[in-house]
Amino acid sequence: MNDPVLKRAFAVLHEWIPFTAEDYGSLLARSTAADRAYYRKEEKNGLTYCVFSWPLYKADNVPFRLKDDAPGAAVSEQWVLLVFNAEDEVVADLAAEGMPLWELRKDCVRSRLEEESDWLYWQTEIVLDSAEHDPPDAEVLLYTNAYTSKRYRGKHILTHMLKMTEEAVLSRRENAVLLSCISLDPDVACYGEDRTDAPYIYSMKDEPARLRNAEILKHLGWQPIRLMTDEPVEDGAILWFAFHRTACVTV
Image (cartoon, rainbow, N blue to C red; front, side):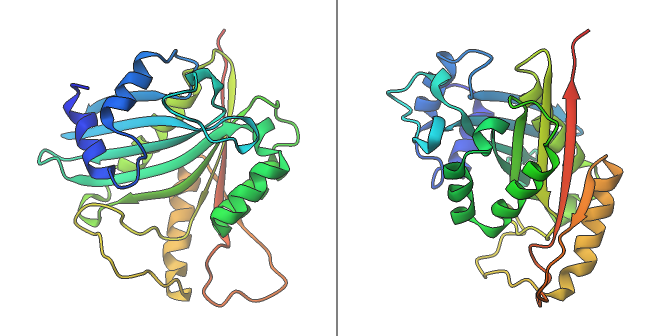
């Protein structure tokens, strides 16, 4: 693989991605536009946006084997977007898991997501509750993180990250519906100058940030959702989410 931007992304994520940049380059070379492997980079306002995905599972939560399985066998994928400045430092990032709606509806998939995090459990419930009239082949994106370094906020970076990711998913088909869900709890920096190794403890002091995130996403066309619970939630976490439906129709 000769692309320096993708090489830099793999260098940043090498402890998390379960294969090498060379293996990923081989996967891309044998993938079609419809397969769950994607890469695109873009320069904007002095920053480099790098979005890519790789297969996670075949149907029914069967793990995808990168070296053995055909790319078309995958039904779910991991999405990552990193934003680099001129010094090749990560200034923003997001991640999401994507799959078709018919796969998300399976009990085994819902159980896996619930085991991964409470946030993913509720994102799944929100999407399924909102998707009663959507086609089974609608695509779903469950965002697990989205962060912009404090020094770079106010530059519409999140807006462009979400736009790039949605366009990447919708580019695969002429007619598609995309259902997206994200938590509005403040995220923690995974990379870059804001990163800290101290665990983040959510509390009600985060409520202004949640409400601000809700306003930002509402401005971008998302629907903020506050879950109603029978029991009080002392830290305020895992209550605020946002949902978005996007349709791409070729005429």
